[in-house]
Length: 115
Image (cartoon, rainbow, N blue to C red; front, side, top):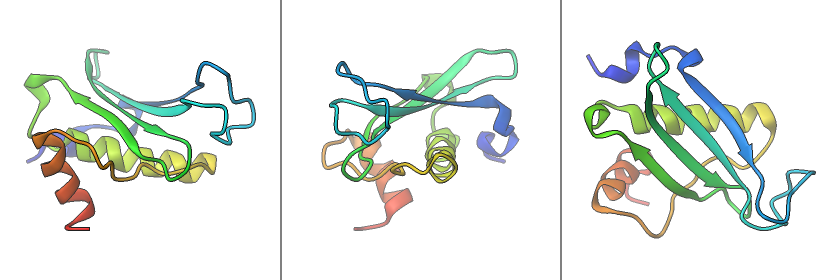
């Protein structure tokens, strides 16, 4: 069974990360604003995180999964959590980036297909 299926929603946290100019109304126009999902173990150990911007389409800017947690579906689960948080908070959901690593390309293909 994939490890991500064993994680509870409580193991994911969401944060809005304002850019250097701030963005009090969460529109994404102040520059470098992003959203962040962080995954931790039940004991609080960092497993990984995903960032996506707020404007114009919610492009994923960074995904990191600690090596011991890779290839178990964690990045996909963080993406799904990001989509859920975006719906809850009424903001841009995480979207495909044009620039990515080889691992990022594999993840993008599994999430977005062959767009």
